[in-house]
Length: 173
Image 1 (tube, rainbow, N blue to C red):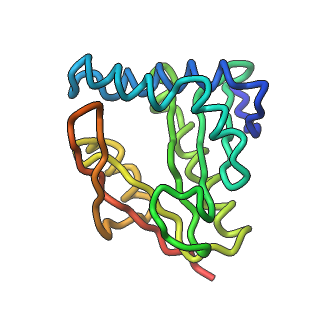
Image 2 (image 1 turned 135 degrees about the vertical axis):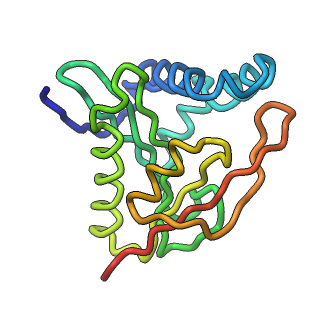
C-alpha cells in the first residue's frame, strides 16, 4: 500500500473535521456518556474551531494517506500554541488520530516518526503529549517510542473532569 504524508490546508477543513469526529467517537464512545461526547466534539471539532487551529501559525496538521484515502492525521504545536507552557524548546503532539479501518497497519508509526523527525529538524529538546489515563493502548504505544510519564493535567470531557498523563520524549542532540 502506498503511504504518503501531506500538510493540511484550509481547503482540507471538511475532511479534517470528518476524521476528527470519526476517530474521536470510535476511540472514546465506549467509556464516556453520549452527552459528554457530544459536548466535547461540538466544541473541539466545529468548523470555526478547526479553522482557527489550521490558521494558527505555530500549529501544523499532517494527513497520512493509504493510497488515495486519508487514514488519519497528526497535529503538532509549537511556542504559545502548546496546550501547556512547555517553552520554545518543546514540540507538542496534540493529536495522532488514525481511523479504525487503518489501525494496526503502521500509520500511527508513520505519524509518530514524522513528529520525531520534525522535533530533530527543529532542534527541540523534547517532544511531549497528553494522553487520557484510561487510554492504555495509546500509552503503551508511546512508551514503545521512548515516552515516559512526567506529570498529569486535567482534561474536560463535557462536564466530566478527567486526567491526562503528560508523556515526554527527550530528544538526543
